[in-house]
Image 1 (cartoon, rainbow, N blue to C red):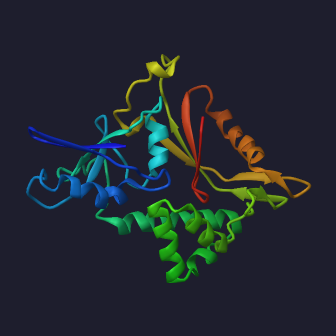
Image 2: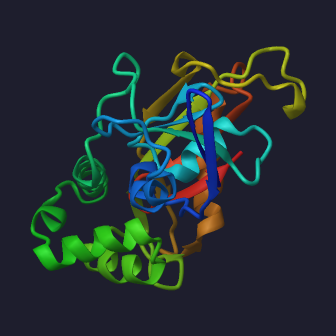
Image 3: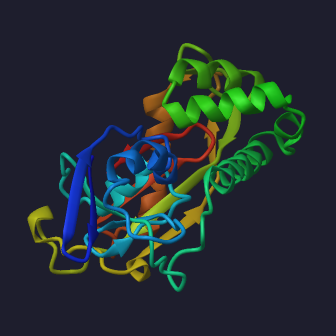
Length: 249
C-alpha cells in the first residue's frame, strides 16, 4: 500500500506491505519513522483515511480493502493522519492494546458459537496469547496456525478438510450497498460514508453424513447467506471471524 501524509502544504508518502489479516493501527510503528520530519507538533492520534472516508481500525485490513475497492487498487492509496481524530465517526484507538483486545473478544465470540463456550480462549496461557497476537500482527501464518490449533476451534483439520459431521462456522458478513446504477464496477462511486455499509453476525450450519468434505463446499453453503440480500446488494465481503479467512464476491 502507498501511505501518504498531508499536512498544510507539505506532503510525503511511503510504500509498505501490510498483511490482509492484520489491522491498520499495527502499521503505525512502520509508517511513523518515515514521516517524523514532517509531523506537526502535538500529541499523536493516528487514523487512516481512504478517499475521504476514515477507516475503522477494528476491521481487518483485507476486509477494508475488499469492501472499499470495487476494483482492486494496487498499491492501495491511503492517507495517514497524526492529528485531528474524527471522533464523531471513529472511536479512539490509542495504540496496539485496543486492537488486540478487540481481536480477542471476537475470538471469544467465535469460540462460543463453535463450542457453546469460550473456555478454551479464556484459559489460554499468557505465552500462547502473546504468540497468537504477535503472529497475527506480523502476518506469520505458520505461528498463528500452530497456536490457534490448540484452541480446537474446529471443524477444520490441519489438511484443510472438515472433520465434523455437523458444526457451526461463525461468520461476520459485511455488506456495502452500491446503488441501482452500478451496472459495472467501473461505475461504482467512492464510499464517502459508513451509512452505506453494515454487517451481520450469522453462524452457518454445516452438515455432512460422511463427516468429511472440502472447504469449497463449506463456502458454497455460506453463499446462501446472500439470498436475502441479492435484490439490493451488489458487492459484499464475507469475513470468517474465527479463521480470519476472507472470501470476496
